[in-house]
Length: 218
Image (tube, rainbow, N blue to C red):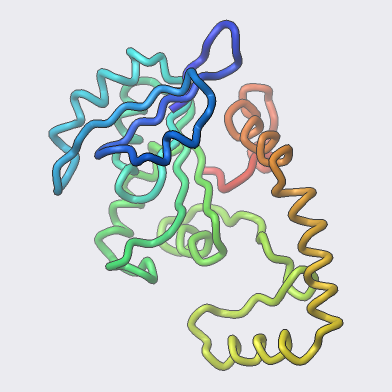
């Protein structure tokens, strides 16, 4: 969650349904607040009243949820009148590695109206969001034939052929590496990431079109 603050543009609050690991010690910014809800195994329904109360108390301007487990927080954020509700998909659950679980697809479709903006971090996730719940597609990270080779994840022959090309053509691999590094520094370095996050959190407030904002628009 992100809340406004007078002296700075934003202040971050990390809200975990369960607990927060020692990873939090890697965050050196002193004013980041951590909240652990200590959810036991099972659904988070019993925590809904507390979460709903926390959002206005924190004066949240943005709620940024990650993955399916936290998706049902978005209706609470909508009810609490949080202006921007971003949901990121970072990967599939271990028991649903292809994202084909119909129950989860129905849940994502049901909660879609409460999400202001989607962000997917892989082509598979992107295509699933487009296919299963009708979210527009995001740009590809890998540019096929320029920074690498794209093949269907479930096509073993295509994967083997791509691996053979990479193994047998050192010049082409070197070209891929150089192009990928240039693209990574330009589009995915720290400075670019900060600019993308600023557009994601504040772009529509400044009147920018949804297409200029990273990720998929809901």
